[in-house]
Image (cartoon, rainbow, N blue to C red; front, side, top):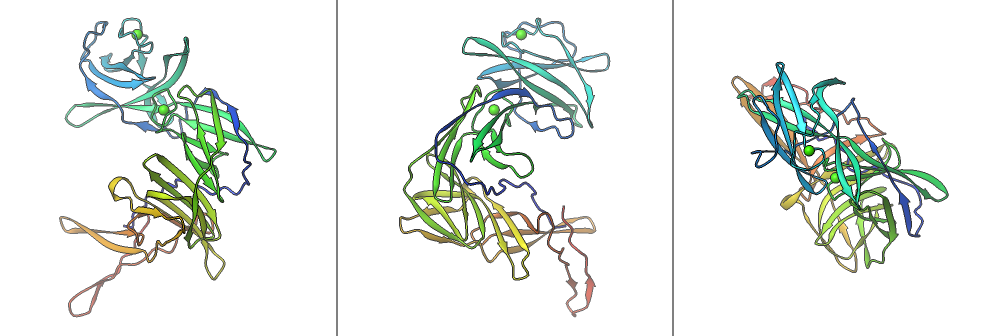
Length: 368
Ligand SMILES: [Ca+2]
Ligand SMILES: [Ca+2]
């Protein structure tokens, strides 16, 4: 089996970017997408402490950070099913809460949407989450949050409106570093961190959303930069320095990058082959595995090739499972490879040969 992590961090954006500072008002809304719930495992099992509790049958308590404070959740049994209570108003009291029951939503049975209440500048606002419950074979209960909040607005860019959406990707009711910003509409939109910095064709910007999500502030910044040569018609890099991340977009083999020391988190390259087919390669690395990248004032060349392919095998009884691990020359894991839009490259074959040269088997790899 050939394994691919099919999550594309960035899409390319060909709009020309204006330079002026912009403040884009954002509007909060419930985002409850039953086709694909997005789960977040942030609950810790806990003791109820001094919380005020109603009578509960076989309760399991959980807590998680929400709106900057710890909130208590409890799952209990009622009529042979589960019931959930959440401290929606954060007063450490579950007797003033209404119960949530599991409901079929799309392909899953879930709790919610649950309106959580937060204090923002002296006002009470509602931020939604959902929850999914799983019972493990040993009877232990796991509770996961479902993302159910987003903030939307429209930026005027080169005289045209462009949709901005911030997703509460860590389901904590606030806009923070773990969330992401979609610039434009799915599926072509440019996906950025909710708080971050962007360099595009030698111009650099900072963008910021306050935790409460009122607006997006997008402004140009002055940066000492140098050219990084990368073999690609279009190139996107994500770098992490000591003072935060940069998303850098470039073209024609050149990306303007801030001078300094970074770790390289991801790359997406677009390149045409001699037949005119447009190939797209994405690779990523995380934590200590991310390769170091030093950008000197005179610039540098960044090379991702040749790709290194390793055959990995695993024995399960009489069966062997083979998979391919593909890394770039600098050790980043290949996460996607396509051509002409969404087409996959041909699937390779594995040839198993005995010591005498006889071919024993010739199975095909499959994506998945
Ligand atoms: Ca309460
Ligand atoms: Ca958040």
